[in-house]
Length: 188
Image (tube, rainbow, N blue to C red; front, side):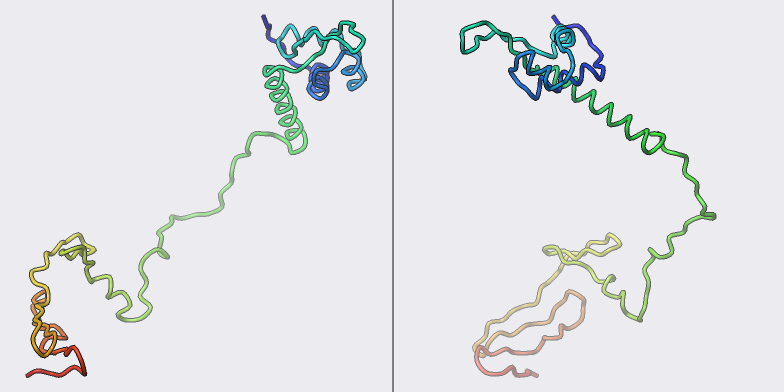
């Protein structure tokens, strides 16, 4: 059963060495740390940060190998993050943002966001509706049904388009006949 353990810098050094020399004996871990590691290893094992495995050497003598556990990885990661945070505070000063000073006065009216007319007629297209199916939709929310679409007559002399009643005015192509071959003729 593991007990909570606050990692000190010495324990973190030993835990990093165990991680680096995975499944290593005490001597190899001590060589990496350059300190005595027996007591720190026991404390880390009791906390559940290090696992101990029994093994045999080539000469069949018993030995104990050590590896880091998932809890040890998490504790080492948290310790390193806290150390980085403390180093950043020491290097850059306080970790708390300083109050902001504003120098602007008055209120914002958003004048540059209003529509600008640089030449007459530039915004006239926005008054025209968008056609969606058989409906015309205006920007102000109005919806108008199309009453009639150009009447198409397939005569002997070609396609003839009748008047368009959509805007109650004759269509620009009304009265024109488009022969299937040759040039367009004007009908009276």
